[in-house]
Amino acid sequence: MFVGTASDVGKSVICAGFCRIFKQDGYHPAPFKAQNMSLNSYVTPEGLELGRAQAVQAEAACIPCHTDMNPVLLKPTNDQSSQVILNGKPVGNQSAFEYFKTTDRKELFQSVTQAYDRLSARYAPIVMEGAGSISELNLKKRDITNLRMALHAGAATYLIGDIDRGGIFGSVYGTIALLTPEERQCIKGIIVNKFRGDSRLFEDGKKMLEALTGVPVVGVLPFFKDIHIEEEDSVSLQNKFNTTTEGKINIAVILLKRLSNFTDFDRLEKDPRVHLFYTSQPEEIAKADIIIIPGSKNTLDDLLTIKNNGAAAAIIKAYKNEKKVIGICGGYQMMGDLIEDPDHVEGSQESMPGLGLLPIKTVLKPVKTTAQQQFSYRENPEICTGYEIHMGETTSDFNSPVTILSNGKPDGYFLNENCWGSYLHGILDNAVVIDDLLASFSIEKTSETFDYQQFKELQYDRLADHIRANVDMEMIYNSLE
Image 1 (cartoon, rainbow, N blue to C red):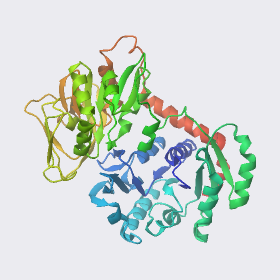
Image 2: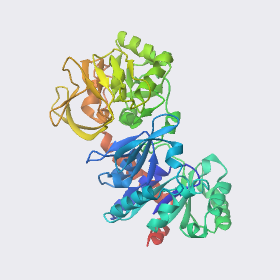
Image 3: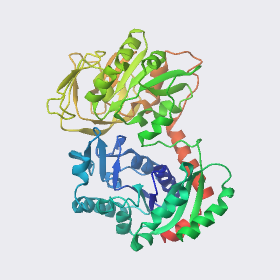
Image 4: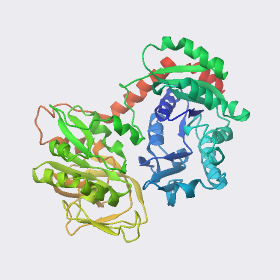
């Protein structure tokens, strides 16, 4: 099954929903996206990297994630170039021109088809996700993600249109009209997404779309805000809070230009004790109870930016005013005394002083560390989980770790309860860490508990119910046969 779009319309979440439905119905599904572009990534059990969306979809399907689910991942390092991850490992940085200049990219397409073939030998059905529009004529010869991939797989293809943006008739009709006859035969149905109001009011529109395209409309999905699935696209940050509120523990995440893995804060965001918001404004940082400096795909560039826009000074002042400041991955590196880049891993800048909050020094290295980790947090014996994705080694004259990994190695630096940093993404998904972070606040604020894993499972089930109620699943299954 291939899910493509007339534009980018939230297909990752819909694919997660289909993964859960197929799992509920007794199948053994798996997600697949040939090429992904995102700063939000995850690590497989083997210690390899893939897009976070496919990890979420795998979780919805109740299976471990694997790089065959996302063989090509592009991680932008600046406005013109990206780190290229192939089968879970970095193979270098390339500009957009360098990456897309070849006409058909035979070798890369061969790699993604081989990944798909391996995956389809282990799972069925495969829920394939496209990228952007499936009818970008100037890109089709170089496409390795959309209908070229669907044709290889012989996939039943469903086109999703976003009615909330307007212009759905033109976008859906135009998308299908621009396909070749061979590609058009792949299209088995249309799904209208993000409909506001009573979907029965779109019955005439549904018939018009079917008459225009010759393709059945298999579902009209109502817009929802009450089902919470981790999002991969940083565009979603625009819809999040950007200021403090009353009656909650206010947590400010510093809004970096190259912020990576913002899903590190999903568990905090859903916690009823907390109001989490994203900002780079010094006055908002000053109001927060806790400040988190997140990961970055270009730590030196983002460090320079927050120094120039006043955010760095606001963070230092907040700590002096006894606010809590913690850093994750690149944010942890920024909290130290110095960051060096002798091999120009991130750019031409070879060194830069950090914020001086932690007595650590970081040297960026060309070799990337990627690993899932089990660890204990401070003195607590409870086993926690997280993962590492970073290019750098951090050292200190003092041994004061935040965590001890299962292999006995220390991670991070704990200065005091108000100041610490760690390389571990996902550290804030663990209840013991969250409870310790919030412990110094009032009993009234910390009286509620929150089981994040249970919450996520409920969201996948609710998403599946939402799709079942509004999509003709019998028609979907008939097309797969």
